[in-house]
Amino acid sequence: MKKTKAAVFASGTGSNFQAIMEADNLPVEVVLLVCDKAGAKVMEKAAQYGVPVLLFDPKAYASKSAYEQKLIEELEKAGVEWIFLAGYMRIVGPDLLGAFEGRIVNIHPSLLPAFPGKDAIGQAYQAGVDTTGVTVHYIDEGIDTGPIIAQESVGIHPEDTEDMLKERIQQVEHNLYPNVIRQLLNQTT
Ligand code: GRF
Image (cartoon, rainbow, N blue to C red; front, side, top):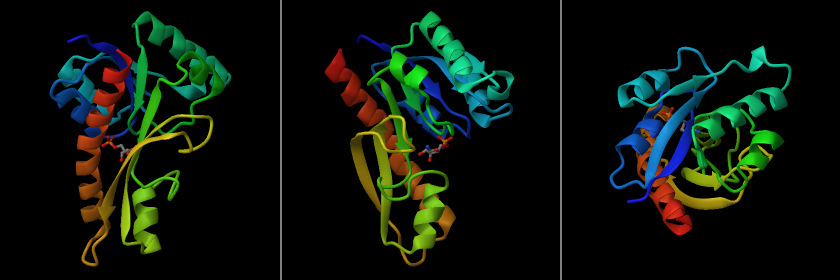
């Protein structure tokens, strides 16, 4: 199986990173984890899988463009072809978008366009809706606005706590993201 070299961008616990690493027959070799948060749990997971980590501090750069140029250099050095965002909390700027046009994908825990931005699970829970879900989409210059690739619904039950809802959403994420990645890369290789 031909494997496409990819980077995962993540700054959280890394459960989606782990799901990508554990997925069967994924035509992907994760050659880099990019993280902007010192101490993030996802870095320990990368170490377990032997994936090199690029930890960067955006504040150490004069501008978004400056750190994205550095990222592009490192991504190109590692031979990265696709970027999968999984809990990366920054807006991708024009430099990175331009360098990886049509090859940056994100997972978001709501049925976009509903509940974009931070704490999408909490937003849906507080809103009292009976259905939320998960969206995998291409990245554009907005916040969770890029073209949608796949969505899956998750019901919110009357007895749900926010934690119960979060757990069910994450289960869906951990299946959906690898499945979508598999489809995307099988189409393009
Ligand atoms: C996921 O819910 C993802 O949808 C969102 O950030 C969260 C990351 O969780 N973009 P994890 O670090 O993969 O556990």
